[in-house]
Image (tube, rainbow, N blue to C red):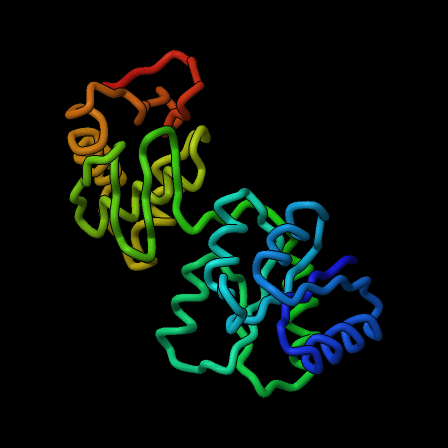
Length: 232
């Protein structure tokens, strides 16, 4: 396993490098956000330990840039800031975990092992399917440059479709993900909300991306998918 440490303070960087190496990992280090971005673009790291308080581009900027570039290596943010707003900002920037200084090195290694178990699957902070975008943190949806207003349930349903764009989702799957455990209504509620979504994300734009797959469920078609559709 290969880990990148981005930390501008020499003593802290050296301590992190030695401690992580002693746990059996190969470690590279960078002292600036720019260097960290370059190294992450040139090497396939299994995880990145990223300090927030960096000169020029800070850890939040670096994390956003990594995700925008399609780099999904798990990121552990290190910071002296322990305010809730800072933790929320870091996680919404695309970080996977957050550790406040001073910290126990045993805890850092345990968090790092947990991140490495997750791997580097794609986990975008903002979801995009064609020109349709959904930002879970800001609770916004746009088609191109036009904002689309959705209710909370419509937003949750669209997020479920966008996280599995191209997949056929059954009514049961959608109910399990969007409605709570206590839901005892009819599965036709999914049909109703799909119709609501079509009226907002498709028909005003001349699109038919939210498809009915007869006998199976529904699918949000990706841009280059030319499969037969049934928008009814």
